[in-house]
Each structure stands twice: as C-alpha cells, then as structure tokens.
Amino acid sequence: MSTRAAASSAPATPLPAAAGTKPAAAAGRALALGLAGLAATAAGFFLTPDTHAFALAYLTGLSFWIAVAIGMLIMVMIHYVLDASWSVALRRQYEHWLAGVKWLALLFVPLLVATWVKPGSIWPWTDLATPLHGGHGTIGDDILYIKKSAFLNPAALTLGTIAFFGLWMLLAARLRACSFAQDDDGDLKWTRKARVAAAAGLPVMAVTLTLAAIYWMKSLEYHWFSTMYGVWFFADCARAALSIGVLLSLRLYSRGDYKGILNTHHLHSVGQLIFAFTVFWAYISFSQYFLIWNANVPEETFWYNLRELSAEGAFNQWGWVGMALVFGHFLLPFLYLLSYKNKVTRARLRAVVVWILVVILIDLCYNILPAAKDARGQPQPFLSLNLLWVLTTLAGAGGLCAWAYLRSLPTRKLIPIRDPRIDECLTHHD
Amino acid sequence: MAAQPNSLIATFETTAGILRAAETVRDAGYKHWDCITPFPVHGLDKAMGVARSRVPRFSLAGGITGFCTGMSMIWFMNKFDYPLIVGGKPFFSPLFAFPVSYELTILFTAFATIGGMLFLNRLPMHYHPVLKYDHIHRGLDDRFFIVIESRDPKFNLEATRALLEKAGGADITELEA
Image 1 (cartoon, each protein chain N blue to C red):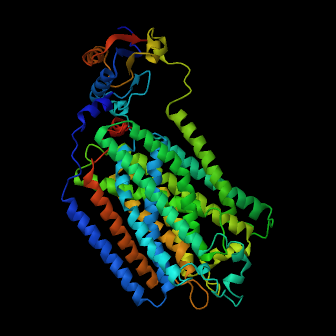
Image 2: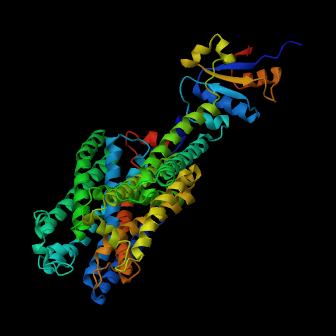
Image 3: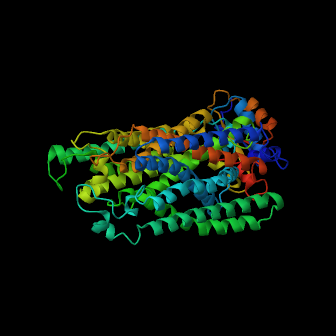
C-alpha cells in the first residue's frame, strides 16, 4: 500500500532528539514567566484585603493546570488500555508534560497550610465557628454540615489531597518510565507494564478526580450537591489536555521537529476527540442544570440562582458568564468543529483549541469564584480584582508546567521510536 | 461499426499496481471509472482523485431538521394546540424540549446519513455490467480491477485500452451493458 511504502521512506530510526532552537532558552523563558506570575500572585496576597476571595482565585488558576495534567494522564492511560496506534507520537508530548505534576502538588501546599494556620480561610467548613448567612448559628450547628462532617473535615481534606497528588505523581512517573525505558531497549514488556498501570490507574483516576473536584471546588458551597460534578470536571480535564496537546504538537510542527510525523489524519482524529468532548461537556452540564431546574428544589436551585440573579432579582454578571458558557463552551466550538477543514487546518485548529482553553478557565471561574461573597452574601462579580489573581496564578502555574515540559523534552527521543505501534502511527489514515 | 461496449475492465495483481494505475487514469482525465478491490486500499481515494464525501451535508440537514422538529412539535402540542401546565413549568421552555429535540437530532442525522450515502452511491443497485465478467469474483479475493465506462467523454476504445495496458493492466476485456 502506498501509505506503507511512504512509511519506509519516512523518518525511520535515527530521529534526532528534539534539539531544535535552543530548548534551554525556551525553558528559561517559561520559568521566568512562571516565577513572575507567582511573584505577582504573592504580591496580590499582601495587597488584597479579601484573602478568601484571593484564595479562591488562586485555586481557580491552579485548577486549570491540574485539569490539564489529570486529562493528560487519563489520555495516556486510555491510549494504552485501548492499544491505540494513531496517538503514539502525541502520547510522548503528554508524557513530557506530566513532568510538571510535582510542581502542581507543591503549588497546592499553600492552600493546605492556610487551612491549618487559619481554618476557614478557603473552605468555610474547616472552621466550625463560621457563622451561617442570615444568623442561623454556625456551620458546626448546621445539620447539613453535620451529616457530611465525616467527609468534610480538615484532616480528610489534607490526607485526601496528599493521596490524590501522590497517586497522580506515582502513575505519571510509572507511565513516563515505561515509555522512556522502551526508547532504550525496545522491549515489549514496557508496553505491557504500561498497560497494566493504565488499566489499574483509570479507576483510580476516576475516583481521585471526582473526590478532588468535590473537596476542592464543590465543597466551597457545601449545602449544594450534584452527582454530575466529578463528570463535569472530567469533561474539562479531557478537553483541556487535548487542547494543550494540540498546541504542543503544532509548536513542534512549526519548529520542524514534527514535519513528516504529524499528518492531517492525526489532526483530524484529535479534532474529532475534542469535538466529542465538546458534546460530552454540553451533555453533562445541561443534564445537571436541567435536573435541578426541573425538580426546582431550593436546596439545589440556590447554586444556580446565585449565578444568575442579584439580591434584587436582576440578571447579574455571573448570569452573563453562564450564557457565555452555553454558547462559548458548547455551541460555537460545536458548530465550528463540525467542519472537516476546521479540524485539519493547523491555524484553524489552533484557534479553536485556544478558544476552548479560555472558556475552560471561565468555566472553572464560574464554578469556584461565586463562592466568594460580598457583605450582603451575594457573589462577588466576575469582573473584579479576583480575576487578576486568577490570571497571575494561571501564568505562574502554567509557566512552571511549561518549564517542566521543556526541560523533559530534549532528554528523550521526540517520538517513542521503539513503540510497537509507531509505524501505524506514522502512517495513520482514518 | 460494432456496438460500443459498456466499459473496459483491466486486472491488477498488487495494491501498488492498482494505485499507480489509478493515478495514471486519474491524470488522463477520466471521470466515469472505478476501482474494484477485495479490501479497502489506503490512499486509493487520493490516487483516484476522489473528493471528500458529500454525505456530511445530508447529515447536517438531517440534524437541523430533527432539532427543529422536536422543538416545534413540543411547542405546538404544549403551548399552542393544547396548553397544559405540567409541574408548575411554563407551557413551553426550550429546556424541557431539549432532550427530545436532541434525540430527534441524532435520529434524523442517522437517517439522513444512511439515506444520503445510499442516494449518492445510487444504491441499492441490482445490476451492474461488471457482474457479467467471468473473473469478477476474484475481486473479492486476490485481484484488483479498474473499470472505465464508455460514457466517459474521454473514452475511446483503442486509446483507453492502450492507456490501461500502459498502466500495467492485464486481461483487458470489453464488458457489455
């Protein structure tokens, strides 16, 4: 077959390690961006009077990169479990990116420390003396808290968080090690070992990411409940990871490293996956809203009411953010990605993944930030100083992740050249 | 003058052979011709110069029709024809009409995709001249064929036969309608 014949003429064995244009310089820039972002965030901590809102902004910016890392980990595992072939070359970029998980864990430490030093500073239920809104006693007296207290307490939060990051780092290290070891000896046993790690790791990921979303985000308004919440976070994780993966691959392509490796069919396949997760996100987000709207029970509807109406019943800023999500997170990317051309043209695909990443950040803001209330118990508006701290944290954590990626990139082959499926990947045809 | 045959068929033994031959026929500017292979040959669509399928247009039209059908059906029944309060909800809201509209979007998209595929391929087709060819069953097994139809404006019995020969085709045979 022609594609087969093309494979033998395509770059076979002696692929250079990704040595392009001074990777060290790029890594240095990423590190500078990260440190500058973190410095600005630290300055914000001392400047802002509302530390609770500031902490939530920090959590939002950090969650974005945690979502990317979780998504990449899951993508690598799905790749192994399904014995996929087309994604072998892309998998290597995910593996490099996973070098940054440890930095995300480190960046989460301040939130735990703050919780122990000053209980209630981030998650209100970590301080049982926090008064409830409207003079209904304290959280410690709240039956809705007491019923959940076995789960929602500082010790469980701390141990849980340590366990989540520990498991993610363990799985990331394992999958990276298997893939990198195969570069050296080409032994098939590494593929099998990675497959075992992936099969065992996927349920672990499902449980940990759901619990993490519940502990870190949903429990900010602990009265509220939704069984869709973990799935919602997963949908954002998957889309964010695929989008960053596209950006990394296109970067390598434009530098010349991925010429002859990345073809139209790879872009088409990734585009289809992003499209599928766009629909998936819409499906679960709509289901969550629709079930709550339809049942119309006050214990559930308050969460959306706060995000739509002010105390006077007028449409507030979060209402517009919600509408922006309906159209920007679903409808526009959905219609755009229906087109074949938009999925396989590099510039067009890059444009839509950048758009999706921006909207994912807004989605995280929508879920986390309204938990920061003003003096009247209403959510602080979307356009406020909080948004600035979201962006500085985003730059800080993102810079560190990019730095970890760029440092890992030149240490290994550009693609897993001895993966048993690498030929099928290079000749991918859908 | 003898009656013009329906088409010319040529046999190839390898995928590489038929890919090269398809490129030759494509470059000679023929439009009404086809390849018969026992299995999908990657890259053959490109070698034949086949454009991307137009089936997605049918799918899109089907999807839009399905969505609008769902929405308007529920609006008509619950708000217009027989207004009925259910669960204290408005007579019509796109929210509760959405699940049904969404299901109909998928259903109509599926119908339109299948229907559009059959329509564009002119299926079902109960008879085709190649079925009369003695060795056509090899096309299910280990041989590859190129068929060029005589209704093609570029068709010329001698020139087309020469082209197929040049492209490496063996057993070039005239098929009757």
